[in-house]
Length: 412
Image (cartoon, rainbow, N blue to C red):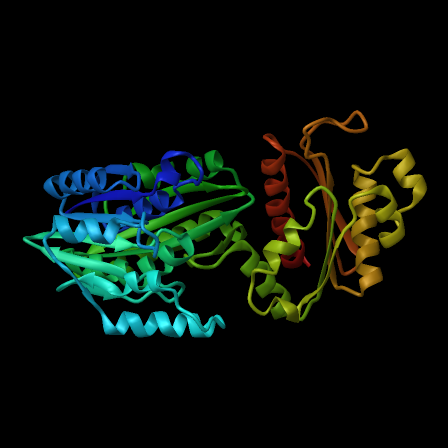
């Protein structure tokens, strides 16, 4: 089955926003075993959108459109799709009630008239509830062709696709697709790939796909079979082999579990509390950790001690240490971690100090970062040399702080 993607929005063409939806949808379509040959971005223009959709329907079985479902006049996707597929728009009472409830829940007593535009749906289509916004998704089927309309905001599109569209598309396939994600941290992509070269060379079904992330490598194991039971049975031995090869570097085999989820889970399991003390990352570690539901059970405090004065005043880093070794040093990272744990009464304290750029400091190169972890009064400090722009260095430092924390807890 051939699928095609159309991203609708002039803001995409102008570069005002990055079309992250395309990457997400492409990956999901590949997982479903769908053939994806074309992706298109088109502006908010009725004529050009209609031409793009007609072309897509002429060469593909399924066309997924994202964006252009909002309440404003330039939101044209649904109207154009209805004309192209000759499925006139009709009022959907269910969607109308959901829009009323949405505005009521956010404390708005007035629903502007243009919002009712979103309650119009193509006659005979399948309406997909939007649990994170007002624009419903729509599945249009006619003459052996399918058009799927999704809202543009990723926080609306992603859950809608995962919960509703993915199972729908999967049901159209003659085979069941099942996959598990083996997530590895602390190892580089080239090293991981080298260690599984033999598996990749002889793969057919299941298959292994490699995805590189900052500080992580994700291996997706996918199998096709007549039913889910058989597919899971095919995936199981491959996942087992990967776990044996990479050992403790594997932190999960769940698609939805993140590195920060794993760290917080370890802290909870062991009844430990945590404090973060950050310099160059400016609170990014604390921000990632506090994404995790229930983190308040273990997270005591997050300190951003950016200046030398803050390091001395809030963390009791010795003036002599800063003078002799500098703020970016193993000694400073060690005192930050140890004193942060003591001052806040935390069982674990992670510290980061480094040079994110764009200029070198204290005759030390951009990308030099020291990360310290105090666990059970034992402090481990590691030196890193990250490449890239300022934001990339801060991202890498954040990920490796989580990795070091996990390692210290597991080893302890």
